[in-house]
Length: 264
Image 1: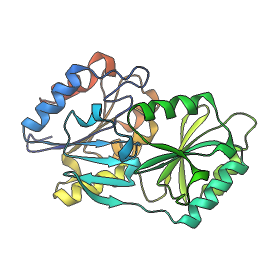
Image 2: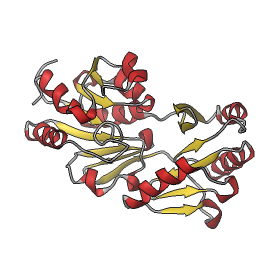
Image 3: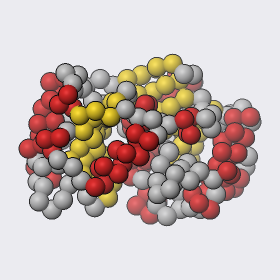
Image 4: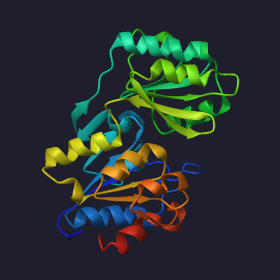
């Protein structure tokens, strides 16, 4: 790859910051700042919706944000793109999730929504609390008339009819497994790659001049679409989609890869 201006895209959880203890290596912060000082453009590309990106991440300094797996894009602190799901569709999905026995968090640019009819699970409560601690707003979906959401996640156990659920949503949402009992749903015409493509097109940059870092399966499309796709060490399910596997996050994986390719 030539050394002309590049555009970099970074996932947050498990890539910039560890999921277990919210640790961000100083080398990662320094590397991102060096990229921008060198004339490159640097973006977050995350499954989190915009309101769920906390100040700890924003303060690092980015040129924009691809949020909610491509459902929303912020460029130069201004809204650029937003995928809007109809209220009718959202209501039908909410009912389907509840009928199938899944426990959801519905995600929108401004708020996270739970559903008390669906009950709860410890993993859901833990993630929700982490988001709220980071500054996100959370409400119960039964307490608002505005039930529209951009994307959503679910937790389930062996008693829940997950196959029926996948069949019900198949015409509208992609199902991405994120673990043994956790999955993420995004609109069929959105993903991290589509968001990245919109940014590159707006900037007049070819995909060959893009570099993407990720650690989980919702990063697969982004890594495949980038000129250089880099998987974080330890994220084995993602390796087959990557051009390069760097060291683990805690071992300064981002800085290591950028130095290996001569970007910093």
